[in-house]
Length: 135
Image (cartoon, rainbow, N blue to C red; front, top):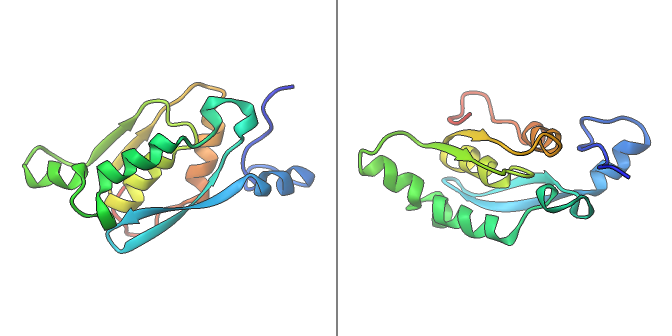
């Protein structure tokens, strides 16, 4: 059967409507209050193609309430270095996207070859504003 192509921005025609139907808006903490990220997932395709509840817990730990006081801020305050995040097994990329959009972190997302097109499309669905921190 195979995995359907990801993201409405990456496909055309009838596949575009199906891709858009798999998208949802997810609220994450950010310095400016709350941030909405658009994430496309395909639960039926397997574990790498969906957002897990643990992702929300990890985002809360890394960003803290309202994007303040999380582990990424504590790292800067302690002089331990910049906000750099390596996400292994990123899947749809929610945690990494939250870190770059919510905390201005430099993020590297990794996953299996068949999952990465979905990760890339979710990155494209949530572009950084010009001049904002993060990458």
